[in-house]
Length: 80
Image 1 (cartoon, rainbow, N blue to C red):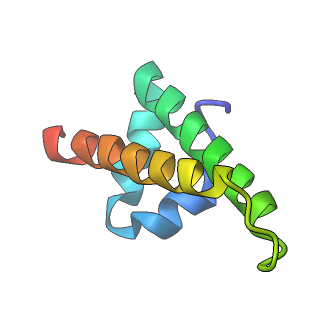
Image 2 (image 1 turned 90 degrees about the horizontal axis):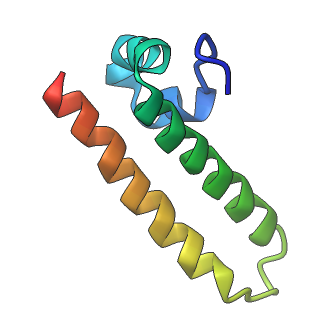
């Protein structure tokens, strides 16, 4: 992701932190990497959950990863 891009899924999830997200994406490489991982997991989940009748064992893995990454992202808001 380019440092000047603000992913909509991140703004949708953390709307009260939109300006912080924008600044962190511009100035913090570690934050950008976490956001890249977060977006990757969200995209994987979206693809795995297209068919509700298809139970994929990786769904739980990606749901947990998204939750963990959201916690990491929120830590940046507390420290700012």
